Image 1: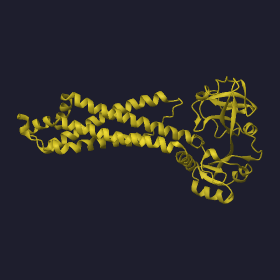
Image 2 (image 1 turned 60 degrees about the vertical axis):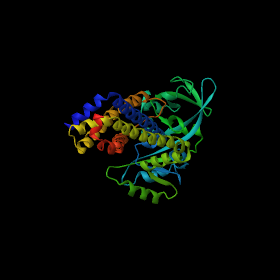
Image 3 (image 1 turned 120 degrees about the vertical axis):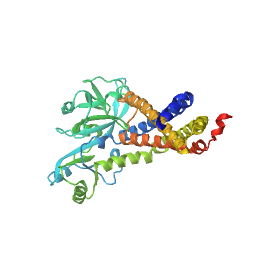
Image 4 (image 1 turned 180 degrees about the vertical axis):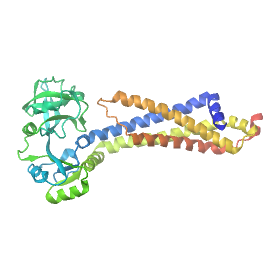
Length: 373
């Protein structure tokens, strides 16, 4: 009965209900949109570790992010490939280059060299072509989202990176790093482009057999290769994100704006629910005059807060889903983990209840006789 009464009161005072609902929807969407862009940037920062398929990375000493690896001897591959618990070991090469566009302009790219036939850390999504295009010694891939800044290069045509001839054999789909354009090729071509030493590589990726403990293997590999940095894939991903947050404007500017947006959302939702309860004081006075107890008023207010909160979250999430779908496979980074959505929804509901509770004192103390004045 109290639930039905709360619902009818919301329908009766449509203007106040609409205002409260729109306030919740706007904040749910705007805060969610801000968070999705922030987490989208996180995925760009650690795109290579997140899609490596490896359990452990072996890098140069004191490596603090995946894009700042030095070089290590490639002979380490043979040294550790026979260890118990190791499924496979693959070297990779990273380096920067200048892509010469058809109009003669240059665009900085990040070259990733992978070794056939496994092509570990190679491109994982294609718009045109497949991993087989990297078997061509001069073959490279560029991403569909970067075609514009690369001057719309054509597939199977010849171009230059660092004055070395390359041929675009494949077009990847939405594989972008935080530093920009990722160009994949075979390891030999990558060394030629970046002038990398023949006997060295940027990092070595290790995949463990099922049941092998990562911490124990890291300890073993560190003892075998003391002049390297042996780190788990997940930790390297975390350190890379932390590095960019601390050392770029992301942590200061974007993180601050996200925090401010969340705080503004908290204030707006609480004020919206607070004023909504105050506007219904006459309705509560009528209920008191008809014999409603203070406990009944309290429960009705809570029901109204939950109804507005749930409806606002549903519509706000629907708009957020449309935004995420519209920006999928675009240059705008957007990604929302499911756990964050759960916390976002729960936090919004709590704020709705808190805003109503602030005005609850006046609602339950309303004078029943005021309705007759």
